Length: 247
Image 1: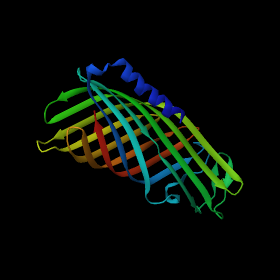
Image 2: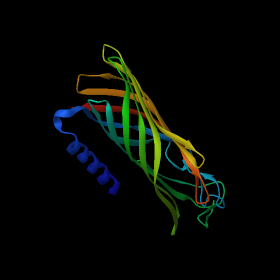
Image 3: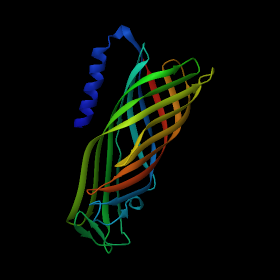
Image 4: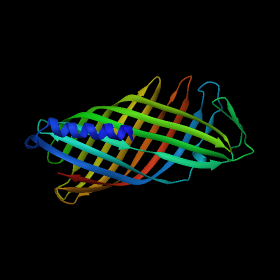
């Protein structure tokens, strides 16, 4: 909630900086659907713990949502703010004992699992291509990562929390036909020696009118880190519908 308040304050500040008469285009968006965790490989500590996959402990599909706000000025520069929470819980008897943060979770008992990966992002971009049919936005994103991994057996409980800021590259492109149909690509991502983060979506939809547009799409979220404190690489598949309201 602390980061959500920061996000809302930044949006309010944007409205204060740019007077109403100078706004080019603003819209709020909501994305919702189901998410599947294909793999979720953990080892904590990163060098000495037991490598295991959390994904089989979760339900195959879980519901999710994302909220976003976009602003595009008349000079074609813009901002995007995104709130993307993700939380999964489950229970499983693992096939091997797991050494997690120096504590042994035995395979003979069911282990309660919890995985949180909330994302708060602020993006600055410039619209390098703008025409009646096509647009391309390129920029940079600062992502606040709020992550937590938890294992529990009876009274035995251990967890690892991690909060950090990650810079990403941003790309959005869209092609629109005269009848209002559209296809689009949305990307945040970066690969470095310390790890990687890739958030890539493809979608198709329709402009219902000058204020609303609706889309169906697929999103892939993949990445992780490999260091002495933590090893975690995960892959998520999202199937979604989104609705954007322009004003």
